[in-house]
Image 1 (cartoon, rainbow, N blue to C red):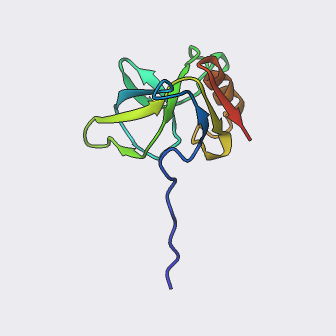
Image 2 (tube, rainbow, N blue to C red):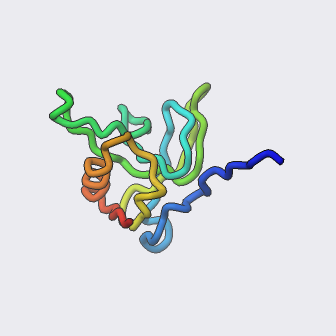
Amino acid sequence: MAALTEARHTAAFILSEANGNRSRENGTLDTGDLVAGTVLQLSGSKLVAFTAADATDGTADIAAAGILIGAADATSADQAVAYVARDAEVNVNLLTYPTGKKDATVASLKLIGIICRD
């Protein structure tokens, strides 16, 4: 019997958020096939996967814009998405971010009011 792998569920990473939709924003995903819980940054006016680039990489600091709520595929065209942009607590173990950049990602999310918990 073949093994099945279940994808991350929409918003599974959220532990708590502000009342109503205060924590959430709508945006446009520019590129990529991303899973729920992917940390995002802005590239112009559109969202892309977070790179966590910093001064030690020879580039300017890049701030996180939020966390993708549900999976989205923008490989062939831009996609409208919802994301957590502020005032939330999230499970860092359910987030997708650049390998080896956990501390930079957590710090960048903290600047916009998103607290990461283990």
